[in-house]
Amino acid sequence: MAENIYITEETAAGDEDGPLAGKRVAIKDNISTEGIRTTCGSAMLEEYVPPYDATVVERLKDAGATVAGKANMDEFGMGTTTETSAFGATDNPAAPGHVPGGSSGGSAAAVAAGEADLALGSDTGGSVRCPAAFCGVVGIKPTYGLVSRYGLVAYANSLEQIGPLAPTVEEAAELLDVISGPDPNDATTRDAGADSDYAAAADGDVDGLEIGVPTELVEGADDGVVEQFWSAIDDLEAQGASYHEVSLPSVEHAVEAYYVIAMSEASSNLARFDGVRYGHSGGFDGNWNEMFAQARREGFGDEVKRRILLGTYALSAGYHDKYYKKAQDARAWVKQDFDEALSDADVLASPTMPIPPFELGESLDDPLKMYLADANTVPVNLADLPAISVPAGETDGLPVGLQLVAPAFDEETLVRAGSALE
Image (tube, rainbow, N blue to C red; front, side):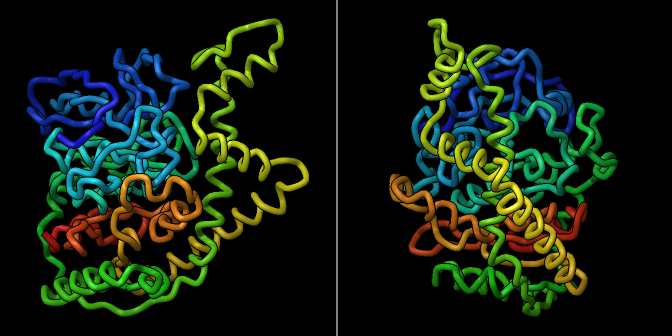
């Protein structure tokens, strides 16, 4: 078994029958599970046991699935390697000695190692697709609003979605069928997905499919990754698809815009962890401010502190317009570019990650290297679109993923196109 896949190895049985009967599903540790510890990979919540199930967990149990355990993750979802977890790094079962990707690294590793049949992760800027690519499994980031976020401990509310990880596209689609659809507890959900049958779309029929290839998302990638990418496009062409190159000039600014928005939302969301209502306590010696500071100093890791500080700075009175407002303008531009590119294509295709998996420990001293690795995935979250990562071979023995992006709520086309590569 690959090292450190689960933070909490506790199971919860679902109903006896249902579409997922007998399936074991690993749950990322930022998704609420009644009676089972939910830590978000942080010392701040080391002892927190939620009193309720997230909507997605409820739906899994109703569908007959068993919770296999709580999967390791980057602390509060902040990272690309699952090395910022307070409970130690997870090894990559598909490439031992390398990171499994993040922040849903434990979830992807559980599927890759056979420690779970399926898994749930959450994707704020690539956190389902990155570990799917690095571990050689399938990961879907649904359209914003397709899957309920009730019971997900928020990192950046306007960006993140819960998504499935599975060995095959069809199995990922089956899991998406179970968790998607409106939820009265989450006002951002839509009616789409209420009666979905995404699994039926996994027929591999790509005859006549038009693929747009954004040059900006291929140019900067590692040579071996680019080679596998074009080999996958050739495979789709051989099955009747065609491709043309498109340009997304705005993606040059997507990573900066993403980190300003995500860190700003994170600084606001994480303000609730004060050691009073819940979370690690700083002990009380008569000085409230000192108590809060101590709780947060001891409870949060370096990466989380870094993002809270940067987000608080970006939202502060003198800098709000200079950073946060500009980032929101860039987000609108990214969305416009994607919509335009998709007006002439059924899907857009790129490498999921521009590089193969880092070696364990390689990116820890250079946060910027880690942030830039998200260049191909974060634009999709800014544009609120669905995307899938499917395995596309290996370079130097390390897994490579192909990312497909579709128009909003067109998960069926993603599933159909992705299944043609299996």
